[in-house]
Length: 400
Image (cartoon, rainbow, N blue to C red; front, side):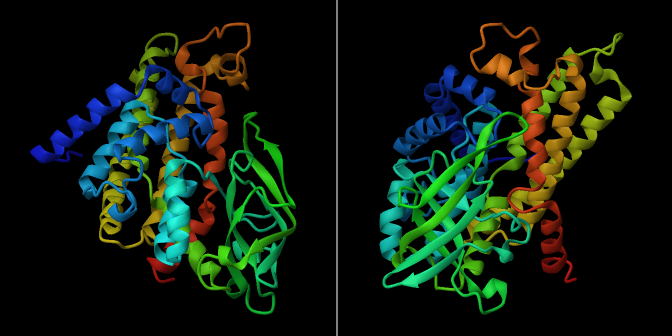
């Protein structure tokens, strides 16, 4: 697919590339390359966020009055594409990309004035308290309670699969404030400092040996009612709005294109004993099929970004983006794993990336293949499972 840009757009692209060349060091690129989890390392992400914030480029989707650069839809697209090509670390989206749009829509002026500047500066580092044991895909069945006591809520319960909770100083949470109505109608949305008495974070180590997710426990945690975002018992509406940005507010195709180029390079290097894998019909056809799908996904993403530029929410297209992007990413990682063959050993990242004295004996491109493959298996579950997304599409798009 060819997309033509104006001279002004190409001048902006040149400006972005020059900025990346100047400020994105080789050490930062290498650290980002070696990251095997969904989110970048906290210190790296915050370091890059501060560099972008000083330039005024940290939050392309924010309104100008809150620190956004006022870019056009095309400029946002170009910026995301160039950052992906340059290997820039991703900023942590939980506050900047997910909670911020909800604050714009549902927050009081006092909440906006307090949280948004601290989010942008990196002073506040957020995590998300949605899923619970037994309440993941069926989020409306959550059991964490918030009971009024004077001007506060008393919160009890637990959240699970909480990404970066071991780093976060704040968590946005769904809690049940009315147990006597239908499940969706009795939920509220709270903003909770993580240093409040009664909060405990336990690590969960993934099968890729990463510590990225956690379980968070709330034991009689006292939270001011002023920390509620949106009306009481209408948190389900707030949560659905936020999930549209979690599932479709990014730039998936730029990263998929980079991964696809890496796969092509890898397939040109690895041999089947007689010729490069890229020359095998099976491998070549599989790569071509993925490339066509990535181009199709890019069109959906551009239409989605156009909606955002008009101040609209992504709607059901975010579910299409989420499912399709995850499927393509998993297919790419599967082909990468097939290609590296004997170097696709479990926990290779622990040997090569975590300071072991013995050097990695395989090619550099094989170092992170296995942990990436394992981590991406969970992508069709987190952020709303694939089946849930299909239900959303069926209702909102097909009218079923």
